[in-house]
Length: 256
Image (cartoon, rainbow, N blue to C red; front, side, top):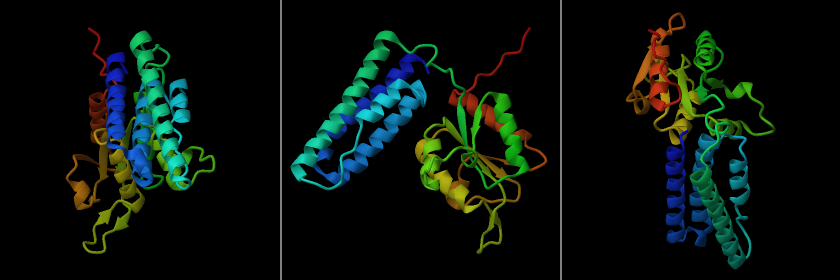
């Protein structure tokens, strides 16, 4: 990510923080935990996009943005909330100042290949072909079941790896049968993950729908591409075009 875009992204998060502080969200434990936690998660994702998931900047921010307990002395909790918010804001300001003064080093800026989260309905030839295509494209496919869980629950594990990715691909293969229409629909886990992906990547999702399968009406309005187990050419062209639009890959100009 270029310095200018990185600065704009982090400035946006800093501006959102000031708004939270002015609204006094720290006065209410429920509002504070929801609003501040969401801001922290979004800022964490922004820092991952700029510096990478193993960066010193990300670790510094996460150490600063520590949530207080939910119960305790009201005055002490209020003070803890304010301190936590101030620490998180100060750390973000320091990171911003560092970028503005020194820029982002080449090692930090784009050293790691982009990662694509794959929501799928289980092992299939289509998933294998998709993985091979992404690797050839220079993109790391992330399939949660193949990653270490480190003791996390299934939901937490999905959330953990979603935050590390740059986009999502919905590989909607045949799964369940709609009891009302008798049509094939994707497995329930895919529909659940679509919702979670939409929260994190609202403008960075690619929908692929197997021939003979139908999306529910709330998803069917999205632009999607059909595929079959035998032929995924159109789906791959769709992915390449979208990834270029996302800024994750660059088209190669022909020589001569």
